[in-house]
Image 1 (tube, rainbow, N blue to C red):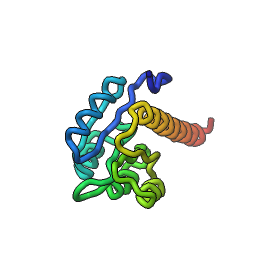
Image 2: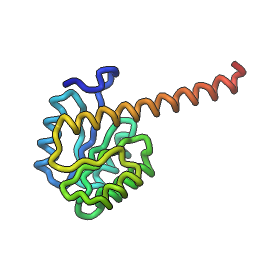
Image 3: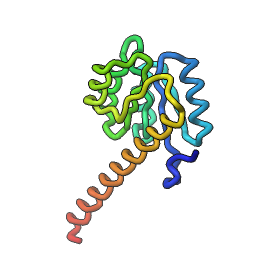
Image 4: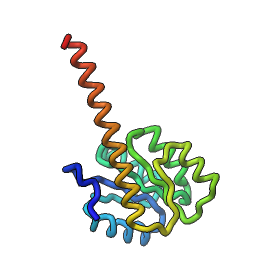
Length: 153
């Protein structure tokens, strides 16, 4: 199944989970579907990559909720504060209604249970990328209108 077929730039995803074997396996599965994948084993490591690579280099972050130290909800808040255009899909094996609600209130695009079906995850990534790119296009259009107004067009 091809994803984001309407764009020339392949989507870029960051996987954030403290379980290295899970991250490695999921990264391989997503890469085989044509997406660019980066990984991080903690919230702070993910934030460092977003900062150094520039948030525009990532379309979607797949983020585990339960991690030692900085958990997924804290990481989500930091991502949305520092990089508001990056879409975040929360992924957990320990879902509760409360954490799902808190994640969605915090700006998560969606929330999935581990293990999740790869096609379902890819569909969520696809929709998140489309939302991000449409939002970026609106920002560019607004900037172009501001420039045109300033120049008297």
